[in-house]
Length: 105
Image 1 (cartoon, one colour):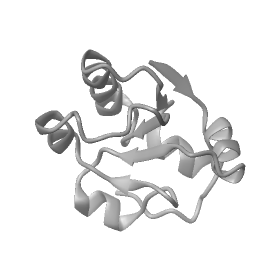
Image 2 (cartoon, helix red, strand yellow; image 1 turned 90 degrees about the vertical axis):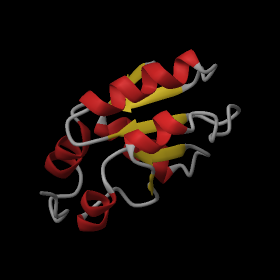
Image 3 (cartoon, one colour; image 1 turned 30 degrees about the vertical axis):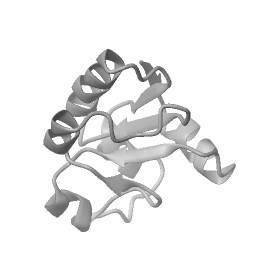
Image 4 (cartoon, one colour; image 1 turned 60 degrees about the vertical axis):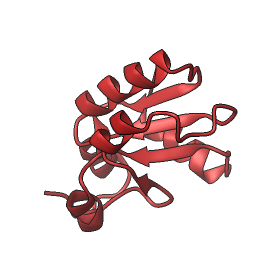
């Protein structure tokens, strides 16, 4: 598992890299605000079905502060995923560094 900064993620998104950007928060939190291009798969759903991702494409996980997404990344590594990154300090850092208009609870 790698850690990725908000600026590195912004660059990946801008270069339209084929990443799987996963928001591991609840659907309510996701609806309130998320990183554009992310899909919402709550941590519990990933735990129930960890084989749902493409192992040939990089995965970037984020949550509120990076704690749950780090635990989720470790689980995915146990299931054979190798190219996993976690957004350092989660969506709160994204709001601080990249998109201050984001509404998050």
